[in-house]
Amino acid sequence: MTQPAAPAIKAAVQAYYGSTLQSSDDLRTSACCDAGSVPDGLKPLLARIHPDVLARYYGCGLVVPPLLEGLRVLDLGCGSGRDVYLLAQLVGPGGSVVGVDMTAEQLAVAEGHRQHHAEQFGYANVRFVCGEIEQLDRLGLEPASFDLVVSNCVVNLSTDKEAVLSGVRRLLKPGGEFHFADVYADRRVPAALQQDPLLYGECLAGALYWNDFLRLARAAGFSDPRLVADRPLLITDPQVAARTGAIAFHSATYRLFNIDGLEDACEDHGQAVIYRGTVPGHPSVFPLDKHHRIETGRVFPVCGNTFRMLTETRLAPHFSAIGDFSGHYGFFGGCGSTCPFDGTAVEATAAAAPMPAESVSAGGCC
Image (cartoon, rainbow, N blue to C red; front, side, top):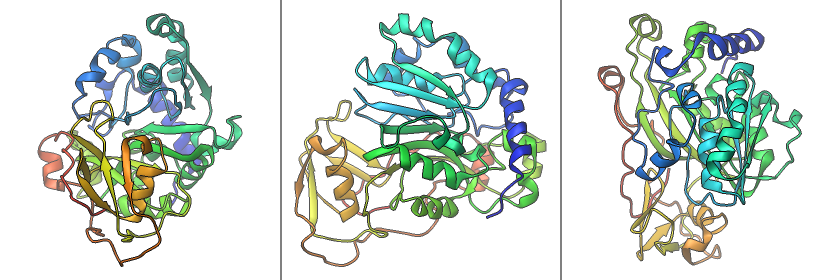
């Protein structure tokens, strides 16, 4: 994996998001535009966010997992603060949200409307920090102090993604989660394209090849990354399309759990869970990830890693656990090593596709 010249790329990204882009209408691809539908329950919350904040939103996915009330949340690359102010309403007065961004112009918008949102919500539970997501250890954030870290189409803009992932794991509590949307490529982006300021600003040149991302995540201690949803990206600008050629880009949301000792493969320990139907908004089926939709009341066989994700995190009160780790029955079937994303390069350039529904599974991982 090659690394672009960090200072030059950092300056280009700051200029692109600080002055070149004045609103999401200025974007030249769909990479930094969330084409997925917003759940009905979130629409009233988004309606309470100031229009100036919404206008400078450049996310590519939805970074709102369930069960947020009372959590301490960190948003990496928060920009003008849309997700911060959305999450602030979901964590409530008993929780808090910290936003980190390196672009002064974006933070000025976020800070400028902090009092407005405090009055809208009836409480003040957000703060913003100026800094780089590759240097989280320099921002005065306490290790193991966050229940959840989110990021929306920003990790690809970093020139040191390994440092980002390591920094996130350092800040998460045991059982905490990194839930983030980002852009990935179906192959390694050539080094020459990685130096292109326009392609970098449009979240394409810095996109990781999906399998390299999985390697980096595992090296940082996130042993079993889980894909939540994905969609192929539409590149309508002829100039951008000509530069990227046959590379297919996807927006994908992953959840990485900070659980020590997860295995590097899905192993069968004879375990199962029963979902109680108690997660708000999910009375019948709980979607852990793209391949695990767990029906209420059903005995659902799981691998050891999934068992721990459901019983050693904030999800635990909503599941009954069956079994332990005293036995081992070999490999848990259903894992694969092919590209995990839906869609093809042809589809990606033909039409913008919505986020796909997670497929139903009676077991199986990855």
